[in-house]
Amino acid sequence: MLLFDSHVHIGVAKIKNIEEGHSSLPAYNNATANTFSNYLRVSSAKGVTKCLAFPFPFNEVKRESANKYILECAQKEPTLILPLLLPDDIRSIEANITNIYGIKEHFYLEISNDVMFPIYDLLRKTGKVLLIHAHRNEWRKKISEISSNFPELKVIIAHCARKQPFSDEGLVDNVKDILAASKNRSNLYFETSTIRTNGASLAELINLVGDEHVLWGSDFPFYKDKDEDVYKLECEFISSSKLSDDSRKKILSENFRHLFQADNIWIRRACDHDSDTLINMLEGISEPERKLLAISAKSSFLKQMLRKPKHVFVAENSKGQILGFLRKSDRPENGALIEEVYVPANSRGSGIGRLLIESVTKALSYAEMKTYSSNDPMVNIAKKLGFTPTFTPKKTMINWRLG
Ligand SMILES: [Zn+2]
Image 1 (cartoon, helix red, strand yellow):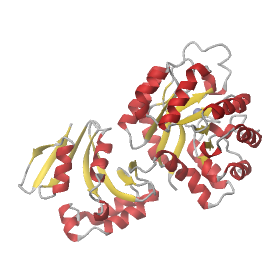
Image 2 (cartoon, helix red, strand yellow):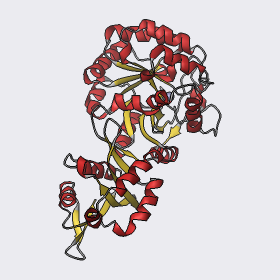
Image 3 (cartoon, protein in one colour):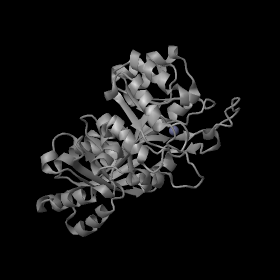
Image 4 (spheres, rainbow, N blue to C red):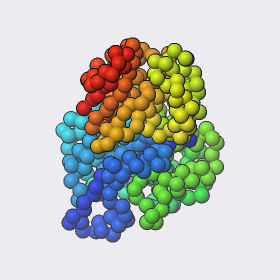
């Protein structure tokens, strides 16, 4: 199954001078760091290929620098990270509105409506989301305020509004309350992280809100028990819940896609789920094209690489169809060699090859590739993206470098 995670904290939360009463809150005695490089490793190992990511929600953490860190992460790894910011003043949100997918509002932050309402309005106008974690008894009030003032705003309810961490206590009652308080249910989504019960509540929730309104999330790196495998447990929660395969697919990936991909083609890291499609694509490459890509001699090696697709990225449309792939291999000091870029004939001409290379090279300090000089489309892409020819051993082959 594809996994798109709607709830990930990234950052290093250095909490100094904890405010009165906060030190007893569960989050303060839990994980307070998930650096960019750590999350790249974790998400790759767990097969998470897209995520909504935002800072740790502590009042004592400088919001401005925490937001800046998230934006930097998303810039480096646009194939994985869809950034949400913690609410700051309207100007800083406005300045970054085209680079973000929305806002994460947290009960710890207790920001007044005078600050939040202009931000909600901006989110509504630009079609971005508000992911909200209100305090236990504030859900109803908060939702009805937002709903009556901004009925078109897309709202995701974190943890499906359950009362206690790591339980489904009060979940169904809270959801009923929220539905009663909301004017526009079509813009309301419920995110499943940290419920992790036997799944009866999830089935009931789906009966109430519909499976197209539920999103899967992990709340990584927060845990219930230290050293637990958060992703394994959150996946097991969904797989053990009594749901149809169709519902499961919607919750784990398709609803996320519908909300955030719109009609765009996006690039994401490939995972096991993609290997059959990638191998079919490889086998469909014609002989003249194999020669042009210099893959005739390594077909069986490539097939093996695509069976467990590491270092492979795919271009995917909003129907979930794969339109092309890129494979790279790592080089020292955060560099990479782009090994193959392939887009089948029926998907060419819309900039997919370029988008693959552009997205993947953002995280790298330099990139190299080799093309036949007769491979006009790749030569054009290389030039447009600023690659320079470094070495031409034979007239037929060009070595390129970026950075
Ligand atoms: Zn969280």
